[in-house]
Length: 114
Length: 115
Image (tube, rainbow over all chains, first blue to last red; front, side):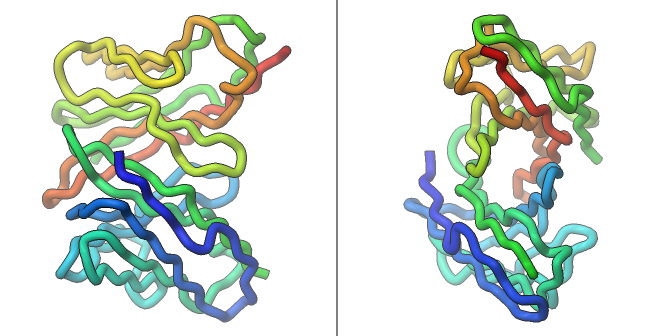
């Protein structure tokens, strides 16, 4: 299975600032995904990032708030812009790999906005 | 659109007892089904998955799950739980949309183990 590393693992951010989360995979993958897990909640897909094309956002998520880059087949970034306390969440990077297109997750980036 | 229901928000079992976590899904085609575990302060770890074939699938850490199409269920089981199994468990259904495997998760079941 893919090994997925995220940075930062945790951060405390000031209201109104932006933070970029990095996701590095140890092998080349076509599809990368970003999920959000709000406190005490389940996971919700933010967007799908395919190398060489614009990210595809799910309903309720917009590019201005969550810009995503996918410069190559092993790396992606998610920026959380103009943060508010409601953005306090775990943000998880995931990739699709292997038989049956299994989805693997990174350890997550735990953001607290104050 | 697919959906997942985990009816039990919180389950408590004694160490050594058997465990069954329920998962019901809604999806128009043959689903891809997953169980993930999230330990406190950790990311998600894949326990097992079902794509096709044998409806009883074996996973890591002694877990298994059975796909029952007639009941739209994919319940997770373990014959004897260990204290280290205390965690949040998520069932998910995947659908290939525009070439991408998108997951919809249930609300999760929090498992507490009594010594």
